[in-house]
Length: 248
Image (cartoon, rainbow, N blue to C red):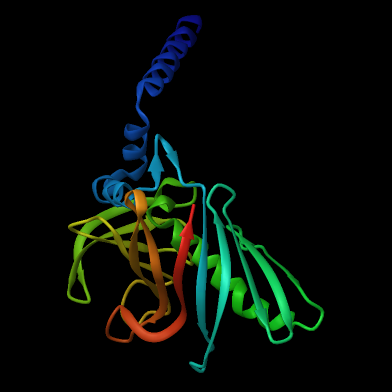
């Protein structure tokens, strides 16, 4: 009994020492699993890390267009702050009736402060789901290094005539089912949620990027549509965010 216990302790010590010898890069690659090659390329090409530290927050101006179930759109200008360390996103906007400020977090909580005459229910209906999705999409491939999603498979497929690497994930399928990365650059192109095939009841997010100073890439447009009947990227919009004036 005593010998068995000593042997077990020895195994634990070896494991602990081995874990301590791994580099941050090796730990990241292990976490990414089958998506290690493409997802690490995506993270590298975003350029969000400097001297071993990742960008913790981003401020930007957002032109926000949301669509109701009938396809009618509403567009306004907002100032946003995405706090990647706290997993929150804040938006400040206004209506003809007054100003408002909203904060959403990664757990789906939404808080709104508004002037007395603002229709809070309308702002909440519009911005609560939009901000929750936007926070997740802004993190992009970094979601695969978090606690709630793990890469399951990685394979090359074609979407909209583009060759991309599809990475399926375990986790909350309402947030993400699969990530699609450009085969050449590794940049994230699409994210599906709710469904992952034409005709499904889900959404697809489409990314465009800007090249910023110091080699940083950041989305300048994030568009979310319903999945199409015969194609993955449909034409019925959920929301669209145009991003400018980015600072970190």
